Amino acid sequence: AKGAAQADGSILLTWNGLAPATGYAAWAMGGKGTPGQDDAQDMVWWTSSSTREFGGGLWDWLPPATVAKLVTSKTVMPPSQTSCQIPAEVKNAAAGYLMGNLNAFGPEANFSYPPKPSDPKAVWNIDWTARVRYRSTAMLFLVGGMAGMEDAGSGQTGNSAPPPKE
Image 1 (tube, rainbow, N blue to C red):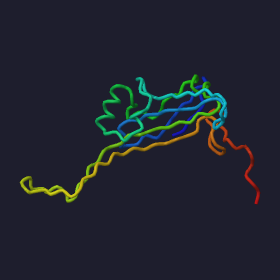
Image 2 (image 1 turned 30 degrees about the vertical axis):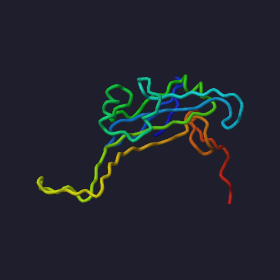
Image 3 (image 1 turned 120 degrees about the vertical axis):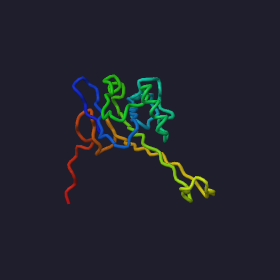
Image 4 (image 1 turned 90 degrees about the vertical axis):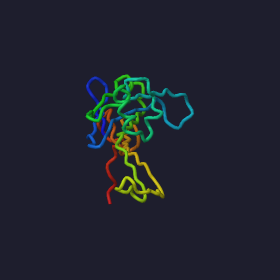
Protein backbone atom coordinates (compact mmCIF):
# COMPACT_ATOMS: atom_id res chain seq x y z
CA ALA A 1 0.00 0.00 0.00
CA LYS A 2 1.15 3.54 -0.58
CA GLY A 3 -0.19 7.05 -0.09
CA ALA A 4 0.07 9.94 -2.50
CA ALA A 5 -0.76 13.57 -1.71
CA GLN A 6 -3.40 15.03 -4.01
CA ALA A 7 -3.80 18.64 -5.23
CA ASP A 8 -6.92 19.08 -3.08
CA GLY A 9 -4.96 18.18 0.10
CA SER A 10 -6.33 14.66 0.42
CA ILE A 11 -4.23 11.49 0.36
CA LEU A 12 -4.97 8.76 -2.18
CA LEU A 13 -4.30 5.34 -0.70
CA THR A 14 -3.65 2.65 -3.33
CA TRP A 15 -2.73 -1.02 -3.17
CA ASN A 16 -2.33 -4.07 -5.36
CA GLY A 17 -5.39 -6.26 -5.11
CA LEU A 18 -4.95 -9.72 -3.65
CA ALA A 19 -6.70 -12.53 -5.54
CA PRO A 20 -7.99 -14.34 -2.42
CA ALA A 21 -9.13 -11.13 -0.65
CA THR A 22 -12.75 -11.04 0.48
CA GLY A 23 -12.66 -7.33 1.41
CA TYR A 24 -10.49 -4.45 2.64
CA ALA A 25 -10.58 -2.04 5.56
CA ALA A 26 -8.30 0.99 5.96
CA TRP A 27 -7.73 3.46 8.76
CA ALA A 28 -5.44 6.37 9.47
CA MET A 29 -4.57 7.89 12.84
CA GLY A 30 -2.50 10.90 13.68
CA GLY A 31 -2.28 14.20 15.45
CA LYS A 32 -0.61 17.50 16.02
CA GLY A 33 2.13 18.06 18.53
CA THR A 34 5.14 15.92 19.28
CA PRO A 35 4.38 12.25 19.89
CA GLY A 36 5.65 11.04 23.27
CA GLN A 37 5.49 14.42 24.99
CA ASP A 38 3.01 15.26 27.72
CA ASP A 39 1.73 18.46 26.12
CA ALA A 40 -1.85 18.61 24.88
CA GLN A 41 -2.32 17.13 21.42
CA ASP A 42 -5.17 16.81 18.97
CA MET A 43 -5.81 13.33 17.65
CA VAL A 44 -7.76 12.26 14.58
CA TRP A 45 -8.81 8.75 13.51
CA TRP A 46 -10.30 8.04 10.08
CA THR A 47 -11.67 4.77 8.70
CA SER A 48 -12.67 3.74 5.19
CA SER A 49 -16.02 2.51 6.51
CA SER A 50 -19.17 4.19 5.22
CA THR A 51 -20.88 3.19 8.47
CA ARG A 52 -20.06 4.21 12.02
CA GLU A 53 -17.63 1.34 12.52
CA PHE A 54 -14.58 2.68 14.34
CA GLY A 55 -12.41 -0.41 14.13
CA GLY A 56 -12.99 -2.97 16.83
CA GLY A 57 -13.70 -6.28 15.10
CA LEU A 58 -12.21 -5.05 11.83
CA TRP A 59 -8.78 -5.71 13.35
CA ASP A 60 -9.58 -9.39 13.78
CA TRP A 61 -9.39 -12.46 11.54
CA LEU A 62 -12.95 -12.42 10.18
CA PRO A 63 -14.69 -15.33 8.44
CA PRO A 64 -15.55 -14.74 4.76
CA ALA A 65 -19.32 -14.82 5.47
CA THR A 66 -18.94 -11.97 7.99
CA VAL A 67 -16.78 -9.97 5.58
CA ALA A 68 -19.39 -10.44 2.82
CA LYS A 69 -22.07 -8.94 5.12
CA LEU A 70 -19.73 -6.05 6.00
CA VAL A 71 -19.09 -5.40 2.28
CA THR A 72 -22.87 -5.30 1.67
CA SER A 73 -23.33 -2.80 4.51
CA LYS A 74 -20.36 -0.74 3.16
CA THR A 75 -18.45 -1.19 6.41
CA VAL A 76 -15.70 -3.01 4.48
CA MET A 77 -14.55 -2.17 0.95
CA PRO A 78 -15.20 -4.85 -1.70
CA PRO A 79 -12.38 -7.13 -2.91
CA SER A 80 -12.42 -5.40 -6.32
CA GLN A 81 -11.51 -2.02 -4.80
CA THR A 82 -7.83 -1.03 -4.83
CA SER A 83 -7.92 2.58 -3.63
CA CYS A 84 -9.60 4.97 -1.23
CA GLN A 85 -9.16 8.63 -0.36
CA ILE A 86 -8.29 10.07 3.02
CA PRO A 87 -9.95 13.53 3.17
CA ALA A 88 -7.88 16.69 3.31
CA GLU A 89 -9.55 17.54 6.65
CA VAL A 90 -7.99 14.42 8.19
CA LYS A 91 -4.54 15.28 6.85
CA ASN A 92 -4.86 18.88 8.07
CA ALA A 93 -6.05 17.82 11.53
CA ALA A 94 -3.11 15.39 11.77
CA ALA A 95 -0.46 17.76 10.45
CA GLY A 96 2.19 16.45 12.85
CA TYR A 97 2.01 12.78 11.86
CA LEU A 98 -0.43 10.42 10.16
CA MET A 99 -0.02 6.66 10.17
CA GLY A 100 -2.17 4.40 7.97
CA ASN A 101 -3.15 0.73 7.97
CA LEU A 102 -4.78 -1.52 5.38
CA ASN A 103 -6.28 -4.92 6.18
CA ALA A 104 -7.09 -7.43 3.46
CA PHE A 105 -9.42 -10.15 4.70
CA GLY A 106 -8.95 -13.55 3.11
CA PRO A 107 -10.39 -17.03 2.89
CA GLU A 108 -10.84 -19.63 5.60
CA ALA A 109 -9.49 -23.18 5.63
CA ASN A 110 -10.40 -26.10 7.89
CA PHE A 111 -8.09 -29.02 8.65
CA SER A 112 -8.47 -32.23 10.64
CA TYR A 113 -6.46 -35.30 11.50
CA PRO A 114 -6.97 -37.92 10.46
CA PRO A 115 -8.64 -36.70 7.25
CA LYS A 116 -12.32 -37.42 6.88
CA PRO A 117 -12.89 -40.89 5.38
CA SER A 118 -14.37 -40.95 1.89
CA ASP A 119 -16.87 -43.63 2.98
CA PRO A 120 -19.79 -41.77 4.66
CA LYS A 121 -20.56 -44.86 6.79
CA ALA A 122 -17.03 -45.13 8.19
CA VAL A 123 -16.36 -44.09 11.78
CA TRP A 124 -14.31 -40.91 11.94
CA ASN A 125 -12.32 -40.54 15.16
CA ILE A 126 -10.88 -37.05 14.98
CA ASP A 127 -7.66 -36.34 16.89
CA TRP A 128 -7.65 -32.61 16.18
CA THR A 129 -9.16 -29.86 14.04
CA ALA A 130 -7.93 -26.42 13.09
CA ARG A 131 -9.60 -23.43 11.44
CA VAL A 132 -7.32 -20.93 9.74
CA ARG A 133 -8.45 -17.45 8.70
CA TYR A 134 -6.14 -15.51 6.45
CA ARG A 135 -5.52 -11.78 6.66
CA SER A 136 -2.88 -9.49 5.26
CA THR A 137 -2.02 -6.12 6.74
CA ALA A 138 0.15 -3.19 5.73
CA MET A 139 1.14 -0.16 7.78
CA LEU A 140 2.60 3.05 6.41
CA PHE A 141 3.55 6.55 7.46
CA LEU A 142 1.51 9.06 5.44
CA VAL A 143 2.69 12.33 7.03
CA GLY A 144 5.73 12.80 9.25
CA GLY A 145 6.78 9.48 10.70
CA MET A 146 10.21 7.99 11.16
CA ALA A 147 13.36 9.03 9.35
CA GLY A 148 13.75 7.24 6.04
CA MET A 149 10.04 6.55 5.62
CA GLU A 150 8.17 8.15 2.73
CA ASP A 151 6.08 11.19 3.63
CA ALA A 152 3.02 11.28 1.37
CA GLY A 153 2.47 14.90 2.36
CA SER A 154 5.61 16.10 0.59
CA GLY A 155 6.73 13.18 -1.54
CA GLN A 156 10.08 13.31 0.28
CA THR A 157 11.71 10.99 2.76
CA GLY A 158 11.85 11.96 6.40
CA ASN A 159 15.66 11.99 6.41
CA SER A 160 17.07 14.58 4.02
CA ALA A 161 20.71 14.09 5.03
CA PRO A 162 22.98 12.45 2.45
CA PRO A 163 24.15 8.91 3.19
CA PRO A 164 27.41 8.69 5.17
CA LYS A 165 30.65 8.34 3.17
CA GLU A 166 32.84 5.36 3.82
